[in-house]
Image (cartoon, rainbow, N blue to C red; front, side):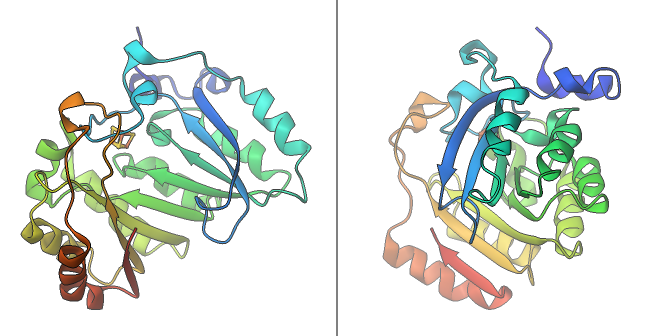
Length: 247
Ligand code: SF4
């Protein structure tokens, strides 16, 4: 079976088919800051974060039926003036060669687009920024550079991650960085290292890992830091950012 991220090599051939949508949520008030939105979930990811909740969107053996993009575009046509934004999340949206083509169609009736990304494809992010196709970017910072591969359980080009960080910070597009914190994966020192790495970013959020169904079943009951411990961490890092908080 062809992997989604392998499809990028086919870019330009039949991009219409190369954007696999594995899920769709018609309404959200919390996933796009300040905008009433819907969420498109792409299928497939090039990382294997053990704490990931989106098993059906990441592991090919659990993939469900894909949703034709026409279905979503026709839903959006009927929501002009009611919905403001479309959140594109995953999986990892940037591994799909048809991403740009899909966003162009979404933006025609003038919806704002928020992209959630793991930052592994800076060239895709760069093109979307250059063509003014994204209005908000949320990038996960998974770990300090030296622990990245261990935390996401995949081969990672740290230069690519770094390039995405710099592109986003200098893009003029609204953005946030965020880190999901599982206590046994990230020490307090690791979080301080991340905060130093992305220093002067506009927004940085720490996200509490919550127990649930995870990619690695051994992670389903892992814990995160206590509110008091997070408060202490935030007190050390908050001055690095315009906005920094716990979610
Ligand atoms: S949490 Fe990790 S594995 Fe899950 S979708 Fe995001 S990058 Fe992929």
